Image (cartoon, rainbow, N blue to C red; front, side, top):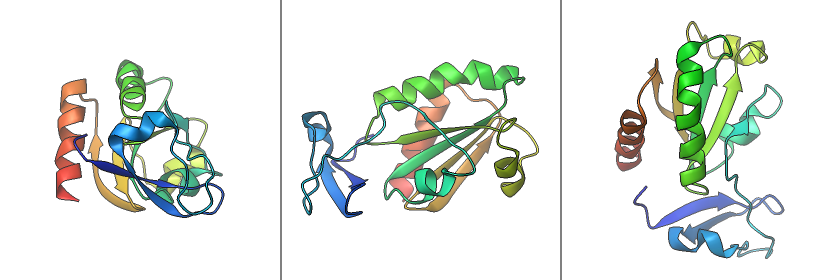
Amino acid sequence: MTEDAVLLRCRSCRAVNRVPAGRLGEGPVCGKCRAHLEFPRGPVEGTAGNFDAEVLDPPGPVLVFFWAPWCVHCRGMMPVIEDLARRLPGRLKVVRVNTEKETVLARRFDLMSVPRLTLYRGGRQLNELNGAVSAVQLDQWIHYWFRQS
């Protein structure tokens, strides 16, 4: 991601903070309440109970990976998804949804097949991809939508 700043919501006071991307590793604090700004450094498990808070509430970009344990393509993409989350902490939140366990979410989003990748920003769906993609294709797709939004 080539953006100069990222948006992080404070868990304590709910204020949105603009943090320079280069300073994410310095333990940024909220400009309003001075609480430590936390962001995941790996994929977050999405559930029916936390989906809206994890995906729709953050002001920045969120990638949702709908998958199933029986799906060979999903299992093949899992290392790519995990690597993406580790490479871009604070810049891109990655949420994994196991559709076998989370049937409520599978019905909510009318999932007919997996894998499905859905990109959100500020609670708004930007786009989605159905089917497996390579790491390069996924990076290109994400960069394209960051430039569009």
